[in-house]
Image (cartoon, rainbow, N blue to C red; front, side):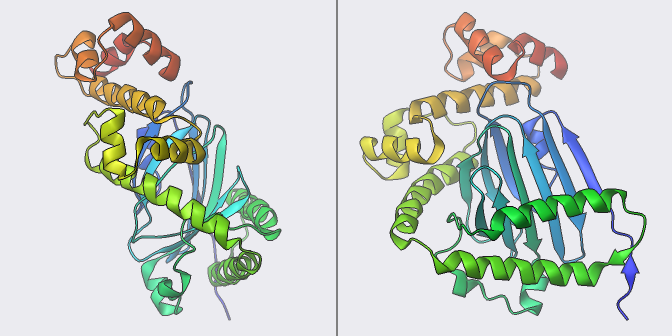
Length: 298
């Protein structure tokens, strides 16, 4: 007889992107805020011993550079386009969320993947591609509701039964998404993702380095026009806007960890040469003056 046990859903509310990206165990992530507002995030997390379920919500746009846990297979259901994104721990991934973003995910850990014979090489070409089918929305709703129910449920349920259901449902949905897959659209999306992946790898390895547009095109390995087109399609913003937001996030990190620096010194370190414009842009993005951020670091 399968033993029932009480399952505990952990919930975290965050007020900063740095706290948000550290709230999901095992993931290697870097977040940067990319639209104005006081950041507000939430994570709900359920550990099923080898399989994890989480729901993530964020109010502002956020640039994410991330790797899934090594050897894991993650089924991530995006609430903005109702698509399934399949992730593994072998490749770096980069993208920018929309505002008021919500995602639910099931992550099968490395030992679970090996024990159940989930062969990664058979999924080549599907990672980070938008996979759609009618069941995505229903499963997302059910999974979110399950987390809500388990957060208040006093009667124990079977961990093994829930784990088995999650595996069966995720594989069933994956099978259905592959039936009507548009290979030409998938190839185009893959090319855009590869472009952004090259930029994302550079950004993750050199978070405090500043470059201009031509240097960014060189990093991506494409002409400037292709960089602009791919950026606009993939992120909804121009490369110049992305570089500016990146510098503002870099300035914020430095202000939060300042050791005797002034706002003017930090601004110049990030190539903001007009202090008034820097303060205006900073406040527009983070809803506080750079001097207010600096005070919190003292």
